[in-house]
Length: 336
Ligand SMILES: *[C@@H]1O[C@H](CO)[C@@H](O)[C@H](O)[C@H]1NC(C)=O
Ligand SMILES: *[C@@H]1O[C@H](CO)[C@@H](O)[C@H](O)[C@H]1NC(C)=O
Ligand SMILES: *[C@@H]1O[C@H](CO)[C@@H](O)[C@H](O)[C@H]1NC(C)=O
Ligand SMILES: *[C@@H]1O[C@H](CO)[C@@H](O)[C@H](O)[C@H]1NC(C)=O
Image (cartoon, rainbow, N blue to C red; front, top):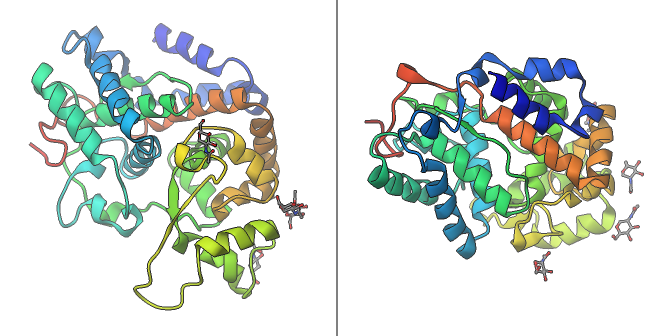
C-alpha cells in the first residue's frame, strides 16, 4: 500500500496537479487498482523476468514496425473499456468482441501471441494475457516517445467474450456521449482529454471523417470547426462516399508525424488550430475544461506525458480480475 502511494505521488508530481486537485488523487485509488501489485511476478517469485521478456520482444518488433505502438494502444483501450482489462478482446469465436464492427481493423494480436509463446516457454502457465497486453503496450508507446509509466500486474484473463457487450463508441460521437462513457468507467475529463492524445499516432478510416468533410451535422457542408485548407487536404485523401462497397482508405490521425507514429503533443496544437482529423478530438476545443487542458498540453509536452502516464495507469486497472475470478490462459486466443 505504502509503495503504491509513493509511486502515485511520483507520477502525480508536477503539472498534472495544475488541472486536477488532490480530491481526484484520492478517488483515483479505486478498489480495482488495489487488487494489483507492482512487479507481481517478481514479488511472488513466479516469473522474475516476465517484464524483461516482454520488453525485449517489443523492442524487436518495434524495430521492424513502429505501428505496433498505436495498434497495441487501441487494442488495450478496446479491451479495458469493454468489460475491463481481462484480455477478452483477444478471444476468438463467432460472437467474440474481436468480431464487433467497432473493432474492425484491430491489430497487434500477433505481437501478443509471440510474447505469450515466449513466456509459456520460460514460465509456463503463469503470466496472464491481460498483463502481457498492458506491459507490451506500455513498452511500445514508450519507444514511440511516451513516458514509461508503472504497470501494476496480477490480472487474470476473463472466461468469456461476447460482442453483445461491446459498447465502444464510434470516433464520430458527440462530446457529451464520450464524456459519459469515460465517466462510466471511473475516468475523468482529464483522463478523456489525455487518452484522446493517443490519436497522436495511428490511422483511421475515412468513413469516420467524411461527415466532417462533406456533410457536417447534416448541413451538406464541411465542419465549420475545421480549417478550410485542412478540409481540402483531407478531402483529397477521402473522396465522398457515394456507393456501397466503395474502398475506405486509411488516413493518419496526426498528419504531422504520419508513418513515424511518434507520440508528441502536436496533436493538441492541431486541435487549437482546428486541424484535428476526428470530430471527437476537435470537440476538446468546444468545452472550457478540455480547451484549457489542450492548451496546457500543447505548450508543455512534459505535462502531457505525466498526465498520460497517470491515465494509462488508471485505464489499466478498470475492472480487473484477480485470483479465481479469472484464469491464466495458455493461448491468448482461447480460454483453457
Ligand atoms: C447540429 O444541429 C443541431 C440541430 O440543428 C443543433 O442543435 C446542434 O447544436 C448542432 N451541432 C453542432 C455541433 O453544431
Ligand atoms: C488554415 O490553415 C492554413 C494552412 O496551415 C493557414 O494558412 C490558415 O491561416 C488557416 N486558417 C485559419 C482561419 O486559421
Ligand atoms: C519521420 O522521421 C524522420 C526522421 O526523424 C523525419 O525525417 C521525417 O520528416 C518524419 N516524417 C514525418 C511525416 O514526420
Ligand atoms: C477554430 O474554429 C472556431 C470555430 O469556427 C473559430 O472560432 C476559431 O477562431 C478557429 N481557430 C483558428 C485558430 O482558426
